[in-house]
Amino acid sequence: MEAFAGYFFELSAAAVANTTQGWASGLLYKALPFIVVLGLLIFFHELGHFLAAKSFGVRVIRFSFGLGPRLLGIKVGETDYCLSAFPLGGFVKMVGEGTDDEVLPEEEARSFANKPVWQRMIIVFCGPLFNFFFALAVFTLVFAAMGQMELTNEIGEIKPGYPAEQAGLRPGDKILQIAGEPIARWKELPEIVHRYPGQPVPLVYEREGRRQETVVTPIRKPVKNVFGEETREAVIGITPASRVVTRQLGPWEAIREGGLQTVNITWLTVVSLVKLIERKIPLETLGGPIFIAQLAGQQAQEGWINLIFFTALLSVNLGILNLLPIPILDGGHLFFFAVEAVIQRPLSLKARERAQQAGMFILILLMVFVFYNDILRLLRP
Image (cartoon, rainbow, N blue to C red; front, side, top):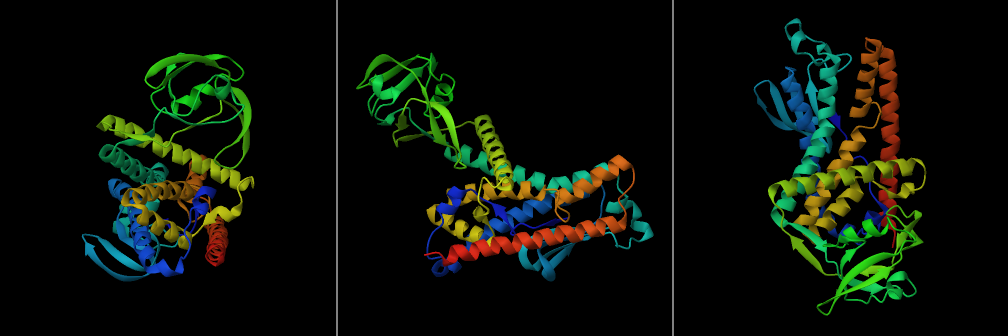
């Protein structure tokens, strides 16, 4: 199983906007975070394939970081653990994995090709699955160690002419309750407001230590989502103050928040891919290895927590992209195995070879395109 970890990642337009200038001057400094990030992603992806193969008794010939010729390594037991020439991927080589592999009679029982189709599907799926596990573990550990930073319930700005101003609210007021529901942190407020468009709702707030009450009627206004698309949502015309608090989390809370973070990023990435196909997100937001290295260097400069979160985000990206039904990627293999399970026989060798060629052609096109995008970003003033 191969992981094309550095070829292309879908990143939001916000990430593009945050890229730093002067890439060439910081190349060496930014290369190290990139190598660390890429190494972690590849290692955990291939570890998933490796452990699943071992659990089903498949002999693993080689566990490689990088693609191409072997540079150095060590053989432990029956597996060669090595470093290869091109660090833009990695692979786990199993007995009987290739269509033209010769398998010795004594190794037939340990051949990947001779395992039941459901076991082969699990072996393939565990690569991307471990990328999600890695992201979950990273988010959980950070939440457990650092807590969760949250905006307080204090108002920072009142928009003129909006319901909040008409209800008498002012900057510095703290929202304590709306529609009978308590507000402890800012992110809870819009979730409630969106449910009451055009309906008067009671609001309790604190001003200069005194508890006061008013009534506010949310109105529908056009707002832009994270993809730049305009939607109409109920609002009252307030923005939060910049004050944040850190809420310490227990082990189970950290796991829950880590899981929610992983699910949210997964969903956002999937939706982003769909919107790319629909051309609602410009293709210029796609980035390749140069762009990833640039962002990794930027996150490293802003602190190790930022770099860790960035690594987890890329891990989710890698997991999703490897599940795309493109031959050569894990998703392509899963598609072939699903067809085999339905028709009760493998696809013909000729059909698989043609599909692999088509998949390689698609990947090459994507690689060329993202490198083109990366170079254009470098040349921009």
